[in-house]
Amino acid sequence: MDKEVEMEYIAQTKTARVAAALEEMILDKRIKSGSFLPSQQMLAQKFNTSSRPIREALKLLEAKGLVVIMQGRRAQVRSNSLNQYVESISTSIVNSKISHAKLMRNLMQVRITVATSAAREFTRLENREEYLAQLWSASHRMEAAVPSILHKDAQALKNFNNAEAEFHRTLVYANGNQILSTIYSNLSPMLDTAMTSIKFTPSQMEKRSKDYTYLCEALQNGQTDLAVALVLVTLTTLEKKVMDHYPDEDAIASYA
Image 1 (tube, helix red, strand yellow):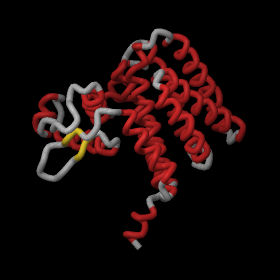
Image 2 (cartoon, helix red, strand yellow):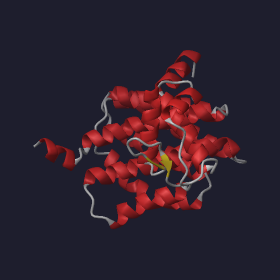
Image 3 (cartoon, one colour):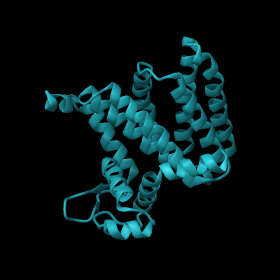
């Protein structure tokens, strides 16, 4: 990734980077469960940003079940356990009668949370080169499929989706967390199946392919913050596309 593109990604992901930094402090238990985060003004000063990225970052943490936000009060840490958060979402997916839209949202939240954690821990792996080779292989297969996708080749689209699913599986399994890997193995097929029914433009597919290349480069170069930001950007963009395809029935009803 050249410097200009890298700076563009960093600029686009200030919210994601603030959220990732706070999440890491929470999961590392530097901020204990039950304690309160600094005020939004103090956080803005700490991260040298405006209040808007702070508010959006806190909303991301709330969506992950890590903090509770109440009007007029500072955000409070709810949980220091990534496993607990993912398990709670997984339990609701398996045991609850929820709408298809909420199911897709929960599945995407699991993927985003687990993949982000895996990217953050990747540079600490002893056998990272082995996993990196697998990630590069999946990325190259996505890249190779793009020209045929531009010509509406159905097999190329299938190859791209399979390579993308393999990319995420490799990244998650590299994390070495058996609980998260097991949960992901059980839930990801549902999301992978749903993804095949969503239409993406050829240009969107081409951009995703480039994003995975940039992610491999960041992981290879030990650029953890950039790698985490790229995972968040790529998957939150996919989440928006998924939610556009599976609109929230409650939201639709409220406008009826």
